[in-house]
Amino acid sequence: MAYVMAGRLAINKGRAAADVEAALASYERVPRLFPGSEAVGAANFYAGNTLWLVRRTEEALDRYRRVTMEYPRSIWAARATLAEAVVLVQTDRAMRALEELQRVRQQFPGTPEAATALNYNTIIYRLYVRAAAAALRVQRQRTSAHEAAKFRDVVGVSVNDAGLVMLGHKTGVAIFDSKATIVKSVTAEEPSAFFVDEKGRVVTVRRDSLVAEGGDYAAIAIPQKDGKLRPADEIPAVIPLSNGDRLVSDRKGKAVIRVGINGKILKNFATLNAERIVMNQLEDVAMLDKDTKSVVITDRDGKQLNKIVPKGTGYELDNPVDIAFDPFGNLYVLDRGKPFLYVFSPKAKLLASFTHAREGPGSFPKPQAFGPRRRRPRLSVRRSIPADSGVPVMSIRKIAVALVLVAAMLPARLAIAQAVDPQFTEAKRLFDALDYDAALRALDLAITGLEAKAVNDPARRELLPAAHTRCGRGRSSASAIRTAPRPTSSRCSRSTPATR
Image (cartoon, rainbow, N blue to C red; front, side):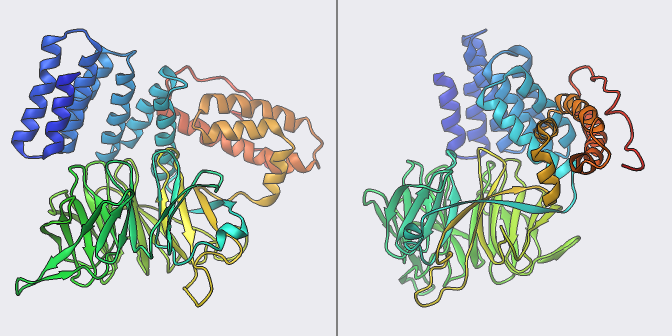
């Protein structure tokens, strides 16, 4: 695997033609020197990744498919198929991606790759198959009142690969597990931002300095026209790049600066007042311009690729406060003024929009920030109220680390009816997991049981029409990703009766 590692290091160094060719040459040596070995699958996989990073998408697809054809039972085949699905979605072939992802689930059950395939399928289904405006379902895990009192002036939220939620606040960064229990705290004095560096350390931003766990310190000084240096008075956003550089937002200078790991200024990256900066797997950079309410998207060298303007077809940004990428390069924009969550494709076209209630249980009247969970297709959102003397920015009594699932809210009485019909609940679970064949079989059993109930039975009245509706949706969705013989279901194939 030494040649594979050499190729990865070459492309990590840069995206120049010489770097790309050096990486590909390293990968090509593997099948010549070690034909038939497992390393060949890995080499072709990373060759595909290299081609994808420089936007040679059709060549990348060819490399990924070569892995699946030559090593169909290798885990590299599963990883290549996942990568192929990402490319297909980015090139407007989302339905093809669904079919490929189903193969991963069926051929590699119980693996992390199968779990990722299910998550990818869910995202595609919600954005491309069921592309209708929906509400946000909110589930909360609360900390104790004692813990909540510690958090004031929240500056950001982030979710890492392990599903841990990191909350930046007035006295540092608190790290929570999925049950909202604090597992670690990093102390810092009034940080304005934070990030996790290439060593896995939490780095906090204090005035003009980046301070990592363990004491590593980098001061940021901005050169002025007269040649003198001034401290970066306020840094609202920082992200690390794969080569160790950082992109730093300089609020006073209304610019984004590229600096070295030691804080040395390398070059001006963009001229705008960036309130948030995020980066996707291609290392495309999205910057939320506070002054213009727009989002500028560039490549890793600062060349503009796209721009999401404040008003476009199907949307109007009122008060955008946060942004994030998903695994397919779709960009999510959280608008505090609506409140709305807009989803834009890699080509900056609106894909979907989601809203939530301003009042009542689970409401977020003033969302401030969010971070997409990487292991499951959910979003973490925090709400805040304007800072006031003696009042925490989060709730006075409790802090909510909210796991927001993008889905339509179910009526309360339908949920109650489901609780008394476990067969329908199981069918719904399978349907939501995109296992349509099993869902149709389960719905057939559910309909049989519901039709056997009395006509005035509450569960029958509420669930039977929903079961027939899901049958129709399940059949149409299954046809797009069919990989096994279609099950027969006489009851599920019926249309919904006119009266119940």
